[in-house]
Structures are given as C-alpha cells and as structure tokens.
Amino acid sequence: MNMIRIAVDAMGGDYAPKEQVHGAMLAIEKIKDIEITLYGEKSKIEPFLTSTERIKIVESDYVIDMGEKNPIRAIKEHPNGSMALALASLRKQENDAVVSSGATQALIAGAHILVRRMPGFKRTAIAPMIPSIDGRGTILLDAGGNLDIRPEHMLQQAYFAAVVAKEVLKREKPVVGLINIGTEEGKGRDIDKEVFTLFKETDLFEFYGNVEPKSVMNPPCDILISDGFTANIVMKTMEGVAKGMGEILKRELKSSFTGKLGALLAKKSLMNFKKSMSPEEIGGAMIYGLYAPVIKAQGASKAYGFYNGIRQAADVVRSEVFPKVAKYVAETNELSKNEE
Image 1 (spheres, rainbow, N blue to C red):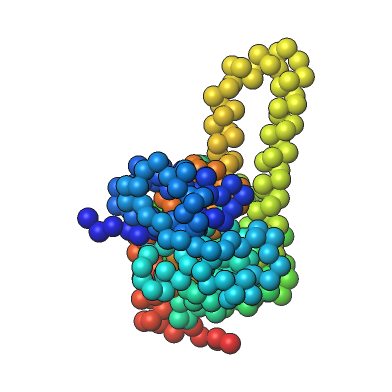
Image 2 (cartoon, rainbow, N blue to C red; image 1 turned 120 degrees about the vertical axis):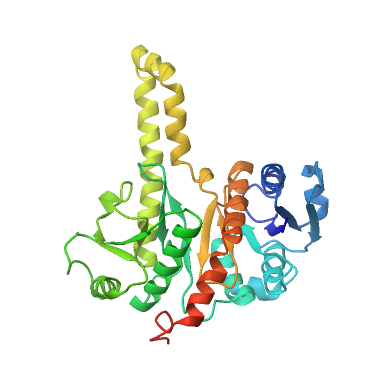
C-alpha cells in the first residue's frame, strides 16, 4: 500500500495543538493509507498524543499569530515556524499535502513562497465546499484569495474545480455556474460579462450560465465561481444566516411548552440540520493552483473538523487531482494564454 504523507501544522488555530493532535489521531484510526507529521512544539504536542501509530513530530520554534498583520514577513523571518516547516516539506517532497487551521493570509502567502504555483496558473484560489439542499455540497471559489482578478485566471480556477469535482466528488460531468445579480446573459459588471463570454466559449467544462445568490443552497451546478470579494461575501452571508436561523429556531422552540415538546420529538432532525450546516463536516478549503494540496481548515476547528481536513487532503492526493491538472496544463496552451 502506497502511504499518503500528510503534514499537519499542529500549532495553528484557536485550539491548537489539542484539537489538531486529536484530529490527527482520529484520521490515523479511520484512514489506513496515511502517515502524519505534526509540526510544532513537542512539549505542547506530546501531552495530547496518546498514540504514535503512523504519527511523528518535527520540532518547530514559532507560531504565526492568527491576527498577523504582515504574513509575508512572518513566513520569511520564521522558516522554522510550524506553518513554514509544513509548507516547505511539500517542496522537499517529504509530504504529499498540508493541513493547517492557522492564519489564512499567512497560509496563502506561505504557499506562494514555499510551495509555489503550478506552471500556467497566475492566481491561486480558496475553494471551500458549501452545503447544499441535496446534501452533495457545492464548490465555491474564490472565497477571498483574489479581490481583483482577470477572466482568464477565473477560467483556470474553474477548470481546476471541475477536475476536483470529477475526481474527488465523483461528479460525472461537472457544471460551472457564475454568481451574478441576474440569470440573463449580459447581467452584472464588466468582468462578469467577460467571464460569461469566456466560459460560454470554452470546452474545458460545462457552463450553466449565471446563478443568482438566492440559489446558492440549491444551485443548478456543481461549482459556483466569482471574484474573491463577491464569493467571500456569499460564503460569510451563508454562515451568518445559518447561525441566525439556528438562534431564531432555538428561541421559538423555547418560547412555549408545545415548542419544547416539538423540539424533543424533532431532536434527531434538528441535530441533522445543525450537522449539515456545520463547517466541521466539510473539513476545510483547498487552495487551488499550487504544486501540491494545501488545505485551510477552520481556525476554530475541533478534532472532528480537523480530521475532515486531513481526510479531504488524502482524497485529493489519492485521486491525483494535481498531477492531472498539471498534465493538462503542460499539454495545452488554453489555460496559460494571456498570462501577465
């Protein structure tokens, strides 16, 4: 059995290293073809590491703060930090993927510096899975990596997402939708119109057309794409609405005896609803366009959520998503034309 080697930034995140270590042990228990390297302070990791089966520790001497104002400097000045060591291990081919719940901008900066982009890709993208009514989930990009972007770069990102959807999510013919203020052709800003035309003409993937934000929970596609500003607002609005709806539902159920009785009877359904909306189920957002997989887990990830981030990384490596995209880029000029 070929083992998949996962690098874990054990010190990044709100609850590090406890939840990261517990998540790693859970992953080892559930996933038989992985090995994990924990990057961090041994003295802080070891109290939580009750099993060393297929797990080892590499000592680090720095943790990038979640509120770091200058992530590029932090990465460059602290090459022996937990995040930097984990990312550098990809370039050294010591690991196949990285999972971190550390500071987002630091992880993106570190990935650009230490992992680097795949040839032919001029912009990376953050691509989380968001919940959908059918339970299958939808890839959303770019969720904050590029506030300003060119249409041809969005074409690259959409193609990458289509490969992920086909190889990892097992969608036979992945469909891409463009987030816009209306469904008609010609709607939106200049960039939306340009992207619509470009996507309509490509044969890299099937293009549905424009998708309004009101349809993001029940989209007619497998992938939703926009610039980083728009997609990030969509993602955070979804998170806020889900949390708000949960609070309203809790308030109403507690407001009367019949409500409390109904809550008791519907307890399982309510728990399933909460689970379906939880980012813990998704695991993390993959950074598209790099040489190798880097998964950004939620900063507030607990053990189960971090385990799902590791599971996601293993699935991507196992499905050979990155080599397949790299091979296509090497064989065609379509994704690399019009480069800066």
